[in-house]
Length: 194
View (cartoon, rainbow, N blue to C red):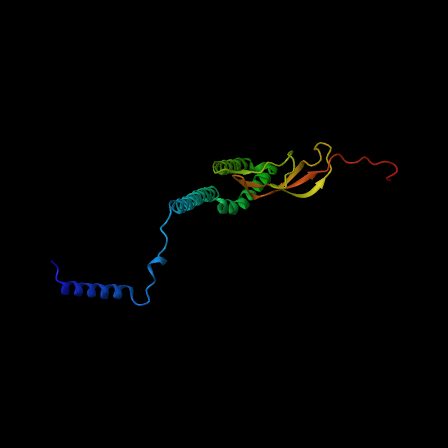
């Protein structure tokens, strides 16, 4: 049997503990949040899965962009070097032209031609090539028209002469070719024009 006095002391201690925990300004128990439903948990899970999928897609797009940028950097890494060497190639071509006009420079001409061919083959190994010009159709992406001239042999819109050689590295133009473009056959003069 439990002593009634001990029981009363236990109840007083329990009331004091409850009062200490809840305090005088404690909210009534019926204001407690409602339990979470399965539907709300499923909706939260769906939203979380959507966020994860979007983050994965963004990461994959970033990786693709980074790979593409890295490949482009590798591809065009030689661009500054080739740009600086182009004037030297022009001078080498001029030396060949000058030596061809001098009959006494045959040995020198052969040596310079060999060096020019060697340099151009090295450039082609690194995908640097001359822009095709004479006889082809004028393309403003790779050609720079400096004048037009009539030509009976070359149709209108095609290139008659190349004034300065142009170069491309892969598909990027380093320097456009300066060209003369045909206007077609010259118009015959009639007696009325005189």
